[in-house]
Amino acid sequence: MATTRGFFGRRRESERDPRLPPGQYDVGAGWPVLTAEATPRVDADRWSITVDGLVDTPTTWTLRELRLLPPSVYAGDIHCVTTWSKLDTNFTGISFDTLLDAVGVRPEATFVVETSTTGYTTNLPLDDVRGGKAWIVWEHEGKPLTREHGGPVRMLVPHLYFWKSAKWIERITLLDHDEPGFWEVNGYHERGDPWREQRFDGD
Ligand SMILES: Nc1nc2c(c(=O)[nH]1)N[C@H]1C(S)=C(S)[C@@H](COP(=O)(O)O)O[C@H]1N2
Ligand SMILES: [Mo]
Image 1 (cartoon, rainbow, N blue to C red):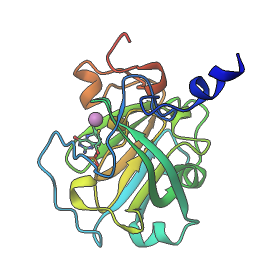
Image 2: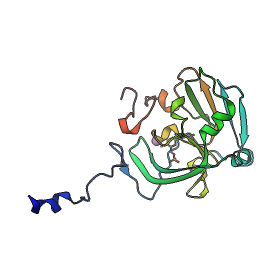
Image 3: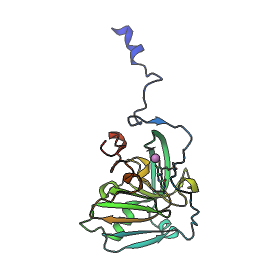
């Protein structure tokens, strides 16, 4: 018994990284670009974000105003539904909780819709963007977010598939009902939890 232990106990090359959800592979140092629409040119000095809908005080912030709020970093993994995952990413911005606290969430709010300047939308349960689970970010690895990755500012909801993280975010609306966004209308899952492989509607 004792003789086999070292052999079978050794970590094998083929062993899956426990950070990879089912059906995902590690994309390594690269970072694929996935954009359904033409990449917009958004001027950081003219960009703003509005949080509205079922809130006490609908509010708009410029990037300069966001930078005055307490910063928040996400360090961890991201998972695209097309099966790549990128491990150990690092994004800087603010926690979305900071904006929710500022606008005052009305009790009847249960869902949000993120809207990009391009018109891309994605829907989420409100609980998936509060409680330290969502960020509004403008830096990746300490550098300004590039245009193709959603710069100047994108949403980041890393515990769900990455299509729930709108690039070139400009509005987040709180609703009392679900309103399927761009990919959700096209057959993707309402929630998109990578650990449950919620890729398509009905998964
Ligand atoms: N505005 C906008 N946001 C978007 C998308 C898009 O096509 N348009 N694609 C989504 C999808 S499917 C993914 S995987 C990620 C891709 O982000 P990346 O190009 O920075 O990797 O952005 C998400 N946010
Ligand atoms: Mo994606």
